[in-house]
Figure 1: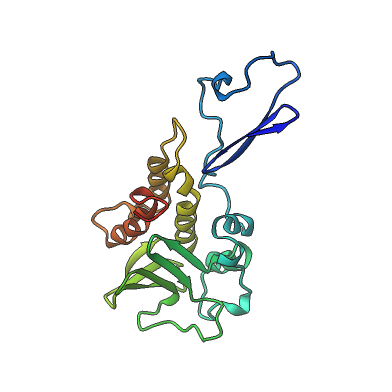
Figure 2: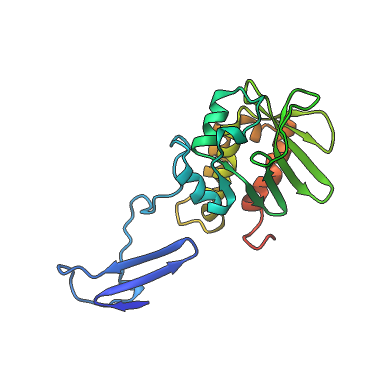
Length: 230
């Protein structure tokens, strides 16, 4: 789209780019066919690396302001003794809502009801609704921060090594949506995503672990389905 003043706007599903005609550039055709994109590595920045720190701005960018919350210390379960989980909740925050296809995660912390350990000594972090009649309680060990899942009332099984890893995997799925659905030439969105989550938490891709079935259900929203859910 011509903007005037030698500027042209290009739009695509992952954003917009404005190109401005340089003063030293040779005059010539202004259509897309006259543009040289070069043959080097892709120009786009791509998803941020997993190693960068989690902070409130990064979580807000992934989950939106109404999809995350920075809690206060008095909103955390009194029994939660795992310092990194407490720090994460009161500095970077936690997602209050996550959706992937028909599956959703809803945060339990920050509500008025008391948060006491269950019969297994675990704290209820939130609920995963995977499908109709398929629900899981996401649980945190109060001392180690390890995240488990009780799926449909069965015994708990490991889901992520700690709360931060659980949040990072959810954040990575939102961050890689564009790369998986609308990849640029030379970009391996699905492969990059799966390699990142495998590095974050090997259980996500361990076919012998029950966690992989749960994570695979969530990941399918961007690795198998389109933005329209089919």
